[in-house]
Length: 272
Image: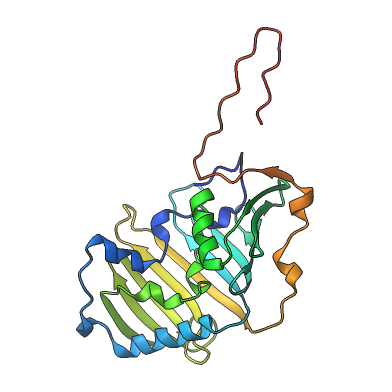
């Protein structure tokens, strides 16, 4: 987990690397080829309709409530997050809920992570698209969005290596709407999705990573979808970049160098 003493920003994105719902990576690990007999065409059509709806949106906003299990005194954290994006190069993520509130901004040129409680901000140059930025954020700071797959330009790539997909039925329990419930499996992953039967947008995703020792469950609930609305360009920038105390992005677990020993009677040298 991310250390909160040195960099602190964006605790909402700190899940295990294995917790990415990125099924495409299974192809490189010798995963058996999907058997068409195990892939229900009805499920394929439902997933395609949802992917087309997401990838065709000029702007997008939604609320995501993320939960994941961990062996900790505080039980199962809940993260209430409001996401606004304008493909291909604008994103804002504001997280509230259990844990430390934080904010993330990306305007196609820089990405900035801000922690209001500590008035700390980390800023770095960023690639030109959301897809590339998501990879860069993970590489430099271990930043991961549990709902990243609905934000990328081609959401359906995560379903490329399914080993089974079947239609469970319709439900009215999730999201106060009628949803199509589907069950999917891939190498090391089991997932259930509730997708709105009318607007084809996801309402809940529940995932278990069977290769994890704890077989932990991860869940994201989606609500308040807004597609195609006008968004002010200032949404994707924060004045805290100029006013907050700056820290460097660093990967989770990075340890700052120890303070140098000072001769007796002298204060230790300040760290840069």
